[in-house]
Image 1 (cartoon, rainbow over the protein chains, first blue to last red):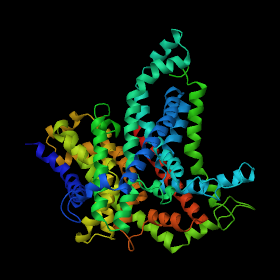
Image 2 (cartoon, rainbow over the protein chains, first blue to last red):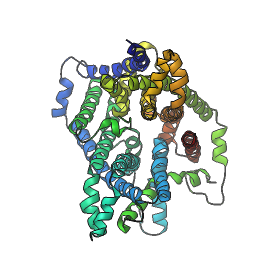
Image 3 (tube, rainbow over the protein chains, first blue to last red):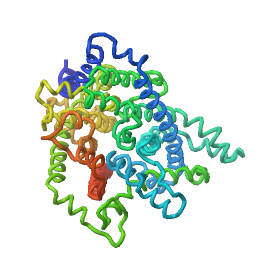
Image 4 (cartoon, rainbow over the protein chains, first blue to last red):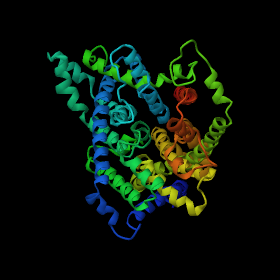
Length: 276
Length: 263
């Protein structure tokens, strides 16, 4: 078989991923049903513990709001890019791609600088006499949302842009020619045709948000706990491996389930651009 | 598409608001880094480079920068070798047969790093890889593979498989075909993948929080401690340096792509 040689090329990556990626994760899943004692005791907490339920609800709420806002803002930019002249297009793309590659820590730091009590926003508003007391803009749910949406918008733009670019511009011109107003062209032609991209972007942003750690941890100030931070708290501070890994398992299942539900609409491979 | 149907005032307004929201907050760290004050603020009397000086003469910051850099280099090498070979193998063997492999390679992009991090914490213990250079390199290298697989697969999609068959038909061995026919053609894709894998490792924090503590103390780890403990203008200076470094890498990527397109 001449193919054997080609399979050998796959082997190093396959072994690395199996031994150093899949195995540690399988171990996480196993700990959730073996510690502190074998059984599904940890999973019972999903039904009985108010703390566990509160963390899950908070996470879902923040993720849904983040997804909605990232889609809304991202749609605006993707729409402008699609309809822009080639030169303007380059400028808009820069606004999307540069933040995408700037360190998540740098971005969280920038938001803290802006939003904290003595931060630039509060100071400016106080000096202008708009407010007398600093507004609580960070270390709460509001701060988390500002930072998360900021992080997620570029991820929302890319799939939407890919699907908008496939819309035939002649359709829009034809609709205009037939007497449709701009708003009508958008509502009746552009918007429906761009929906697959919107759904793909929504799923992507939602699953990224679910397990997001750094931004919520820095901008949440430890009071508004999302799932990822809760897991790290259980394991690093409270040494409750069973509970921590239980939540990690629930997190992975939630993500896989979301992907499964939307697998007809969302082509994962296309979404990540493997060109398949 | 321009000229026939442009975005309306509402659409364009929304796009502007979003662009400003994305870019402005990041730019704010520059004036803060240049402040003449001792605390996090805008410059009052004049601009000062003292905070850059603080960072660039601090053994701790420099040590972390160096550690992050060497870890990222080693991890990138791991990702690039494994990811490139894997992408080529998957491309040559039929799509069906390698579907599962491709899916496995994408897992690190889908599964949150917190889940992987707690798994590694337990997994690396018995292997003696906790708080070790090698441990962090493996963790970053493995999770960097998807970026390389994606960019190399994209490059391969534009490559005519008949060239490979011709080379083999004329008696070239697998190694020769790789070395002389395939690799030169997809080099730009490999470089792109390398840059992304490098940035991935360079910025990675969540895994490091779990599998490193004292001996391995990367730059993101130090920034994390800085944000949580002492917010001072030196942090802003570090942020500015990081932004410049990222822009440099992106420019390099862009230049490489442009060169390969014109070639």
